[in-house]
Image 1 (tube, rainbow, N blue to C red):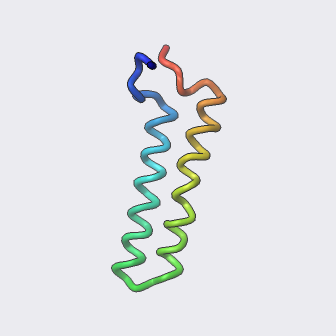
Image 2 (cartoon, rainbow, N blue to C red):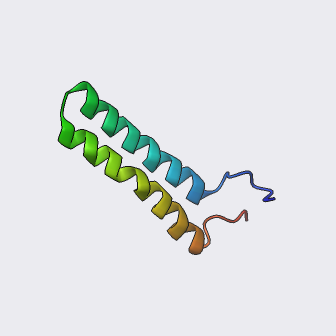
Length: 63
């Protein structure tokens, strides 16, 4: 088990991207804009991709 409990730049960046994607999708639902909704849905896996890439770059380690 990691001693950083997810408090790393990679984890926080992934959370921010994931939260932004949910906000965009939510705005799309409220505005009845299906294009905006699906853009938000498409951004959700980007959060995982950002996390993996930043982790491989060494940003998922405590210093």
